[in-house]
Image (cartoon, rainbow, N blue to C red; front, side, top):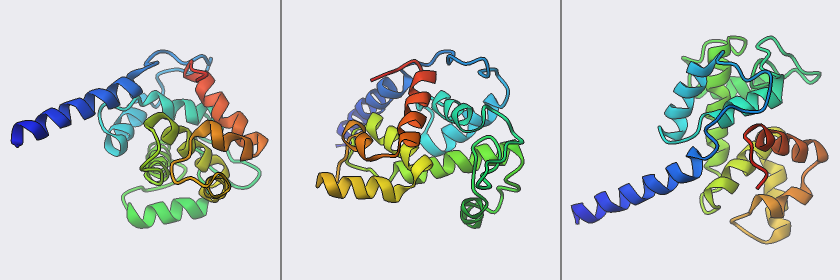
Length: 185
């Protein structure tokens, strides 16, 4: 029994590492430096596990803010991960050690933590689609994905099924992150 569980754990970790270790390379952007990498690595590992490719979150930050820690959007989203102040407050209530939204370390930590919350909302969706749906939710809101899932009459939505129901900005956002990661699938 213990051997069976160990084998299943090994197979599970192997499959996850196969999916997320793909494209572990330099992203196609002049903003892809090593700045902030330690924070992306640390919080990716903390919230997604050691086998998850942390470059996805750095690509997300490039798409969000062009890796500008001082970025503020027209709607008030702040920092590298463009976190709304109210969203940061909710995240900070559960993580009081996340000191300030304007500090790159805590902005990255909060963004990746929030990605994890969104990622967990799609437990029966295949891994790569879960990531795309979490990214789309980060941009457009989880409610948009939920509404599209209802229209599709599914509890396990796939990104390509949901994509036509998303705003143009969200489709471009996910496509940009995929492009930065060197994948178009």
